[in-house]
Length: 352
Image (cartoon, rainbow, N blue to C red; front, top):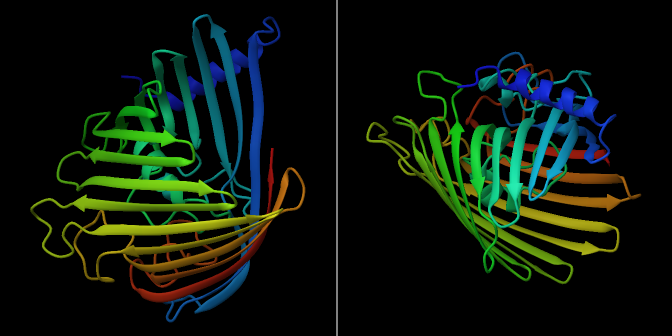
């Protein structure tokens, strides 16, 4: 087992970058997304030591990365390294602080290598977006602010070994071994994820399952999205399968409905999310999101690389709305407490 994956992959990228001097067939592309928002937040009751409302700046998942690829006909080898940037704090860190629950909050968002062949599919190893998230949660994760993507039980990124088949008649299969816990008393690739997707014209359907280590809940989900003219519609359903020790909030589900409409340079967006469970009264530790949530937004494509955004976000129970000076996962109203939290955010993003 490779124990220091990030250093290994970073070294690989440095060596590959140096190789470009001698080899014109190695492609290197730098990319990034710098995003910042001004927000006004209020909750019905904040935790001790915090005000019930505040106005401030928050990063919206800025990142910088580099992609390298080299063809060895008929194979293609590629590598990717991407680091998080918290602009208001001027730190290389994940603004959601979820990274700190895995390895370090300053670890790369993405650090992997991939080997692919057109008629055989691809094999990816390293820190990556996971198969379950890509197929189930991503279809409704289309907002620009920090508050995008919270209404799910899915884990976003982990170290994994993932095989993806080529697409046959619209069908594609993904099988992945995932390091969900960073060796916290479990084997390295301690969980399994499986996904099946079907695409035809502007329709995309997907099913995914996570077979989770030990006594943690397994997770299954369905998603669908469809584009017709300027409209995009998407929905997902997720179901946790609780272990026998869970007595309350067993087998909680999440349902999401998303729609957007594009009018020239403006895109209007709306999302409704509902998660089973009661605030501050459930022993299903894997039920991350519970209660009702509403998300409304408008994006304006000002220039090719510059987008302005305005969004409203509401959560019934505290999860996504943080304290203004968070240095860890710290919801303003206390985790899963009744909050009726509201956010108005306006921001700008530069993508390249």
